[in-house]
Image 1: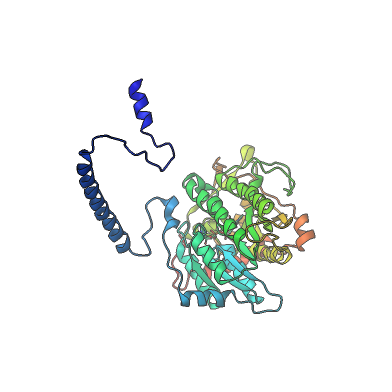
Image 2: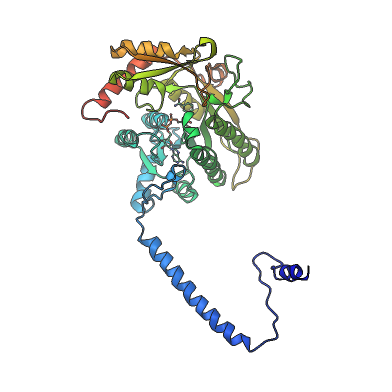
Length: 437
Ligand SMILES: NC(=O)c1ccc[n+]([C@@H]2O[C@H](COP(=O)([O-])OP(=O)(O)OC[C@H]3O[C@@H](n4cnc5c(N)ncnc54)[C@H](O)[C@@H]3O)[C@@H](O)[C@H]2O)c1
């Protein structure tokens, strides 16, 4: 018991403070001083070695082994030439134009939205970490495309607060179009950390910087139809329940909607969430079924088509990229200003959520039939039971709210949209481009 007491006595009363030993043995002091000098010497040596090792490492580190941490590599940014490019890309070139920071600009939707904004004279600056969730050369090709139209994509992570703060220091963005995310439903079982990193931590970091920016930008961001999860009431309306996510991806998007509510409530940030429904089109994502079905049909490989219990049809509300872009631009144009300043809310701010779908779900087997006709190749179909790894049986958007508030009116049917996709696919992957995947 007494031993315990003396042990407790040695614990500093305040964290970080150390109680002086009131030992009466003065002659021990000299010895103590010389040990302290030795300790200090070796500490400095150790610190020196650490610093040498740190500064000798290349500035762009190779990707770390753990895939959830791969986007934590360091990037080169800053300097007068870099700032000049940032400013020039974000410069508004039309009357009543806006200046938009587009995160995930090298992604599928980000590329199309950035190009459309630039075309109408808005200032656009991209941000992307070019991670290798899917073939990064496709992201580089999209980057080259945007570069030709005058959009600069800064290479960096949305978790990098210093970079984000710098961007807001250089440009007073009026809007942020936040599309950077870890997408994909099935990959969440393989690499859950990447969803938390980009969709939760990254989103919070971005909102933290936006809330402190002066003026605060209005933010439009990509949620997902996946938030409807196991909801069976169709078509899905924004008022339906979203508390039964079927995948971690869906859960992180749902978390994003709640986080958006908080930042709107506390800091007066204007926030609009867009629930996209299975977006497809040219420059699309290789991890999506329409894309890899095309690749595999052309290669003569069999494709897996899922069916639900009792031969139930699996269907998706496929939405063409141009319709999604119109919805994104309309959301930016109708977004009201944020009301806060200096990190403080000054009044209530706008908070919205919209479905952006096509309102006509198509069975996945019909998608395959359209691809067969367009590619003039018969698919080797392998019908399989829908695995329980995050996919839901069907999605179907009710878009009346977006119609009313954004004037959103999708106009491309699956047949027409896939025709454009196949034309792009064939030209992109022939003519010297490597085969997809
Ligand atoms: N395409 C769809 O069908 C669909 C459906 C619903 C929702 N969404 C959402 O729309 C948005 C855009 O999707 P997409 O299809 O263009 O996906 P995408 O993967 O092609 O684009 C996302 C981009 O974000 C980048 N990125 C990821 N994490 C980042 C980070 N931490 N920092 C910086 N950049 C990062 C990636 O490199 C990628 O280029 C995403 O938020 C996605 O979740 C897409």
